[in-house]
Length: 247
Image (cartoon, rainbow, N blue to C red; front, side, top):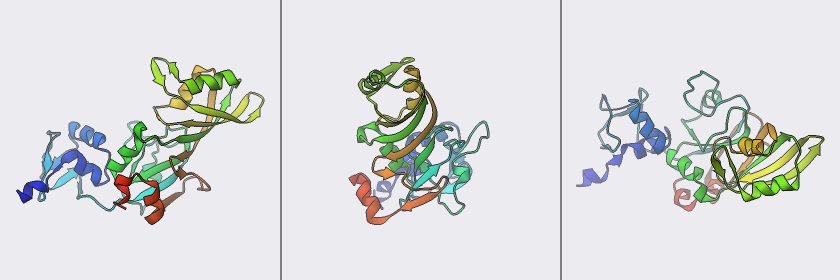
């Protein structure tokens, strides 16, 4: 009975080892990229036993490691994925060689730059992505086109564009120069290409997008391409309570 209590569902085991989120772990299993004791795993609900040998993409993984957390200034031109089918440069290819294996908290598209959160815990990454946490994502967006109060109010009310409903987005004009304007944009959903899509719905074209904050984490003076680890009390005070005691 004691042996059984140590068993852990495979997707949770992989996420806790810092490989990816639980959802992505299930995708890896479905794609035949996970082995247990030398055999390709096909059962999504499999429970890992203490003596099992688990491999993901040919690499043996162990049980949960100490949770670590990093902030990274993502340059434009990198995709936020471990494996890119088009062989484009990725965020993970450009991290320092001494970094542990990490997953990102959400994604920034290839042409978006700025703050990206990285952690060794797939479980934490998934939790911080959830809109229910209410964490505000803040961006500076340079847009081409006419910005007026009517458009900003439409954003605040929420927009449906190409069949996708976007929640309230708070945007304020930061600096104007002809038809090129800088906006400060705040949102909590973080849907794929959300800012670019809602701006397009208002006849505004985003030509530069920089994430400057994600919840309590700030880009600050972090240089482009720089990574900084956040530890100890500073990290515990910023994480949700259920994770604070794990760092």
